[in-house]
Amino acid sequence: NAGVTQTPKFQVLKTGQSMTLQCAQDMNHNSMYWYRQDPGMGLRLIYYSASEGTTDKGEVPNGYNVSRLNKREFSLRLESAAPSQTSVYFCASSPGGNTIYFGEGSWLTVV
Amino acid sequence: GENVEQHPSTLSVQEGDSAVIKCTYSDSASNYFPWYKQELGKRPQLIIDIRSNVGEKKDQRIAVTLNKTAKHFSLHITETQPEDSAVYFCAASKMNYGQNFVFGPGTRLSVLP
Image 1 (cartoon, each protein chain N blue to C red):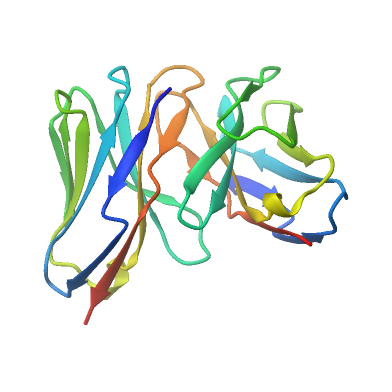
Image 2 (cartoon, rainbow over the protein chains, first blue to last red; image 1 turned 180 degrees about the vertical axis):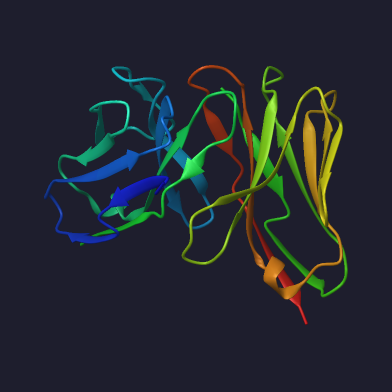
């Protein structure tokens, strides 16, 4: 039981490049989330998915797209990376009615 | 939408002393309040949580209190140890299908030996 697994762990992008952060959970959770964490800003929700086939915008969705591929997987795509998207990204999942469990994080630098 | 404030942003205590971190929330419909501990370079991990039908919950050296009327909740750590040094986040959520969690900005706790 690996919990929430996200890849890659580290990535450096040039401005304008695109990339996809992958996330998978093996806990049979319905809900999945993508957060970004910046110094002094806490964890801010980018997108979440209440169930397979549904996605909703969070607090900071601009510049990102998501896909809930199936119940296990929830990917985050940066279509045209900008330096302001330099951050640590956390995927998380929840069974609903309970707390959320985080992946190990992905450190993204856009130069 | 929900807004969560957290104070203080930094807190230094002597080993063995108590630490208290306070959070306020704005949405009276929020009914689930977890606390997370994040060590440097690691993921946030749940340390304790409380639901709105309970006023206080305790787990060994940590406790959480909730005041629904005032819309604030607090984390209490007693007999602090150096390994308690970390960033602590509070969050507020509505327990339902597809719930959204809103986090406070975090408190950096330093326990001095």
